[in-house]
Image (tube, rainbow, N blue to C red):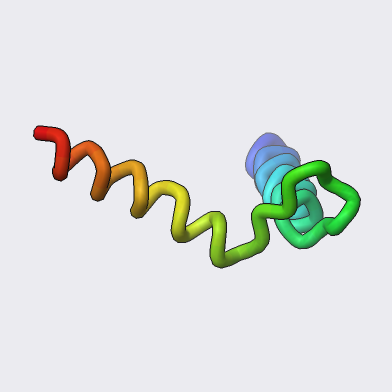
Length: 50
């Protein structure tokens, strides 16, 4: 039973994240491109500075 509830919670949080990313009601629209771009830019900036 515990595994089922954990799976539901994980899928529920993933569903909420997907809705947040694709929602245009946010003040700052991130989108799936932003989900990939922001961490890559942070890593590239860190490597450039170091």
